[in-house]
Length: 173
Image (cartoon, rainbow, N blue to C red; front, side):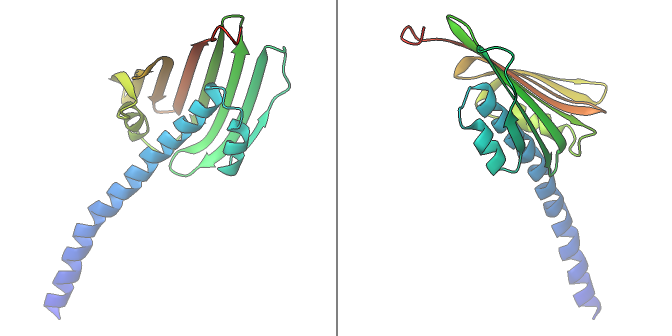
């Protein structure tokens, strides 16, 4: 009987760290999924609203203030992250377009692993800094130098901010 209880205790102790790792990994990948949604909007993907809605976001195009500006809003309770509010816009200029997306999460569920998972993506490079127990990242897309990404997780919030400045091809102008 004692041998059986010992075996059960050992198995439970071994399984606990594995289960905890899975939860951390899930939170980190949830942060990356939020970034990927932001990338769709900021890159000007015409199907971004539909893609967001398909993933459970309450997403819609806002009324435009100009024929040269499209703006979008989306909200979602993201498991492992928290209540995410997304704002995006695409501005059209004669020789370029500017895409911007920002996601704010007040009182996020995840910790610094949310930002670290983004900073660890092979498609981004840059630097991270720890300031007052928060993690801040300043990154650029490895193969797209016009994709600029800031992200942070501090005591109060988790933020993703992506800016994309894209020159228009001669045929688009």
